[in-house]
Image (cartoon, rainbow, N blue to C red; front, side, top):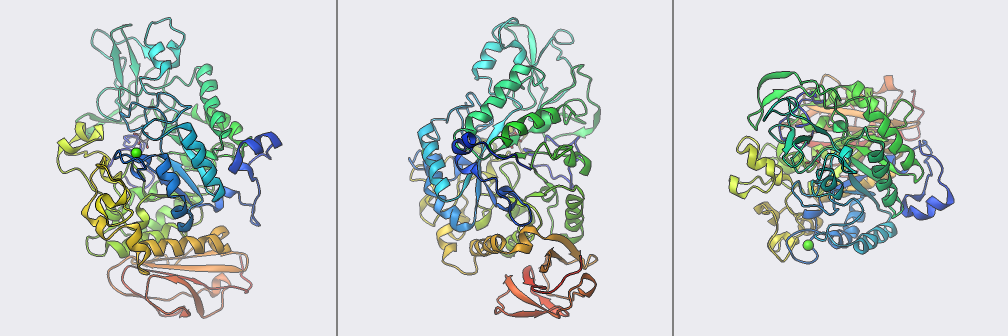
Length: 587
Ligand code: GLC
Ligand code: CA
């Protein structure tokens, strides 16, 4: 799963990971689901979520309205104009439900409320209606695999072997005194089994012991959890990001997992999660959730860490009846500016056959600014990566702060660490605090995030990398993002066009066409520190024009035309131009 910072190759091998078509709406559901109401498609037959730009918000760190050092829902509401101007159509808010915050919200103790740290249900309703008035949809995070150990279901479950909710979780006898039922490991370190003296059995937890896994084989669990999604759809939520979907089912016979050579950051033996990850039963649950979602024209996004193209394909469902948006994490695994590797990743994503969903950053991985940056040209490289993933076919999910070039700010010592895995795994695993620091709004103290003490330290680079300063600088990362997103929203080829790779042997420049009917856009990105001269012969693609009309570039060129033969690309630069407007393009 994504929570580990271990660098993974493209399509992450399962063993190492974990540690890593909508139905028309009824009048009733349309009125209740508010902004999720439109089931309209565009000329290419695309749904709203295919044309949308999604933006992940870590609510603790976005904007703090009451100066307690922690972000909150009124804070998010106050920044919706900023998001609209940036070109964001939907925000995914990581869990903001009542929680003991052991895993900062991914341990939910009540699915149908808001944690007081973040506000109230009334604050949610205000955020939702303000967002709707600005055409921004709200996506919530559905933590399906586990609850908090403080959830009333688990409190009842652990109270006796015969309690009403006993079978809502996974309880087993040990193999012998002091011996867990099998060798399964928690992705967060140690055994995945926790002994509970009260009833002398072990319960199973894929993540922290405070996150007991729900028993999805129990129909009552399914009903209750499906009901949760309905409850939020009725309150105007436009969809869910489904957390840790691969962890939903376990082998009921509890076979031991194969042990692999070496140890992980927690000092545990490496293991292939053969019997407790990506079991086929998950697809039945996803099909059921989709039926509920379809009644509200809602979208389901999956945290789908998969090992192969086939596995990712399966998450769309045999008839497109599971997740509309299973996330493709290949860019999280390639941490260098390598056109050959990136080209291969895109080709594999395209080969899946569904609508791709690209992710460059999230709250579990070091920020791309540092992953790709060379320490000298990081700002130019941030634009290079934006120019890449925001012009690919599919839907992008941004992560707050990436648009201003926020850097990772890892804790300097174990004592500073807030994320528990950073304490257990120190120093190999420093935890995820570094990528979760407060949003940098301006150059005032605490980057304008709070007037209190921010829950995580803000890196000194906020003085230059912040929204207010970058809005004033036409060459900033932020202004480039704004212009790129504006182009994406208005250019038919970028929205709907096929991906056609070009110059596939070029080691420095990645280039491709996005082609839709008579329109084509050329994207050329120099991923090297030296200028590169490139030529495109597009006649074979049915494009005869010798020039391209510049739409957007990071080079300080005047708007105009660029020659397709002998185009010079500055170091770490992005060129986007129109090559076939009005011409007939052979498919
Ligand atoms: C997902 C979340 C991660 C969380 C884990 C357990 O991987 O992205 O942040 O810790 O699930 O819920
Ligand atoms: Ca607050």
